[in-house]
Image 1 (tube, rainbow, N blue to C red):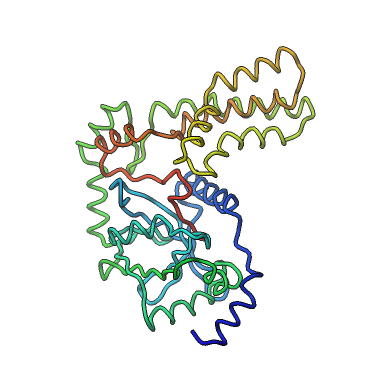
Image 2 (tube, rainbow, N blue to C red):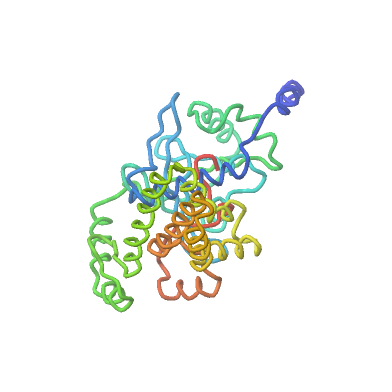
Length: 336
C-alpha cells in the first residue's frame, strides 16, 4: 500500500460508521425468519451489476459440532464461481460460516435457480485485487467498503465458491434426492417420532398444533388492543421483548437464563391475570396477551433454545438434519 493510499484511508477512516451490532443481529433474525416462513421463496435473489448483490443460502458443516449450519450471504458471480465477502457486518470477528469453511471447504448453496454443491477457497494475489475491485460494482455491502475493511483487525477474506461439478443440478441429482425423500427408513423413522411425511421431505409434527391457540391468542390480543384503544405498540413491544436476549448472544449464561425466564408461560400468565383482574393497565394487559401468544407460537414452530445435551441427542437421532443457527454471532447474511 502506497503512502498516498495510507493517507487517504487515514483521512476518511474516522468518518466511517459501521452498523450497530444489535441492528445487524435484528436484521439477521428478521431475514432468517422471512426465509423460513416463506419456505425459501423469499430471501434469495440474483446479483445485478450496478444495482445490487445477490443473496444465496450457504449450508456448511459446523467446525465444532459437525452439524449442518445455514446462513444467508450476499454474493456476485465471476464466471461459474460465486464470490462473497467474509465481513461479518464489518465487525471485528470472522463470520462463523467462514470459519466452518476453513475447517471443511465443501458446502451447498441454494440459489434462485436451485441448489449447487461447491468447494470454498480464499482469493489471493492479483485474483483478490480483481475481485475486491468488483465488489464495488454490486452495491449493498455498505458505503466506502475500503474504509470499512480498514477498520477490521485482519484482512477481509474474499471467498470463492467453486462448483463441485461441471453441471449443476443434474437429473441424476434430482432422482437421487427424490429417492431419499421417499425412502422407507425415513418414513418409518418419522412415524416412530409421531410425524407424518408430506411431499418432498416436509413433515407435519404434533407440536404444530400449538400454532392454533398461539395464533388465536395473537388475534385476540389484536382485538383487545382495538377495543381498549391502546394501539399496536404493546403488541409489538411484548411480542419482541421475549427474544431480545438473542440479540446479545444466547451463548452467554445470563442471556440464556433471561431468555428461558421470558419464555415461561407462568410468568406471562401471572402478568395477564394480574392486569385482567385489577384492570390497572390495559396496555400491559394487551401486551401480556401478545407475550403469551408469542410463547405458544414458539412451541408450535419449535423455536426454543436447546441445551448441549439435547443437541447431541438430536444429532444422534438425525445426524444429517440441517437447520439454521440460533445464535446471531454464529451466523452471517448479506451484511456479514
